[in-house]
Length: 298
Image (cartoon, rainbow, N blue to C red; front, top):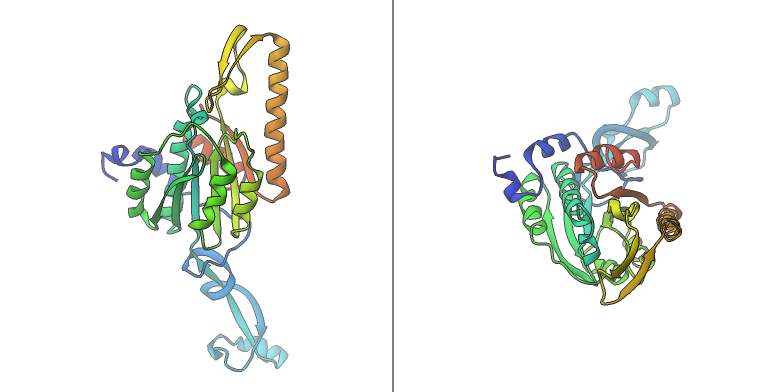
């Protein structure tokens, strides 16, 4: 890529080079109907042997295994793995709460969306990128191939910012644009007043394998405050006056721990990938370490 890559794409050229050897993983093969590099559950014509099956009239006689016939005196065909491309949908939460923290959660969310889209595109998968607010606010069908990174970069450079979150409605809207089985990656803090469960279940009904990447800021994970504060809801108009004591901080940590554990348990129940990511983690560390640990990339 050229020297001005970062001006057209949210990641530097040296970061992209470190992503070149990676690929996205799915828990099971998917039949997309489009020839490509990814293993399909359907039989095909690649060079990777899968199994034998009995010959039936009309089958391609060139696939008969004559050595098996010599041993068994029955006709068997050699069946090979089909290879197809995958549709990867990357959804970024753009509500106000994502702009909280130092560094802001939105900064890592944008970089991570760019990295995952790049990995998918270089493997010739088809990519859709979208933004989540109180609805599916915008989306872009970037297509496939490395040339499509510029379309992704342009989209991510113009992400909207919305005051409120309705993940259930926003994720339900995905049914308007996703028509094939694929992988949907949701990047969010999941701090939505109405929850997230119904929306994610709706995504799964679209024959999607789902990955939930939760980003939280360091000062959300370990707040370092004390004394009297007036706290404002980042996605609303309400304020609350609180006196921060060690007991209050301990209660907060317990509530946050319960919230993240419930999200992880929900993902486990529905065979989805989940990981929590502090916003001060580098995008390379996220992709090469955290996402490898949860087997979203290889």
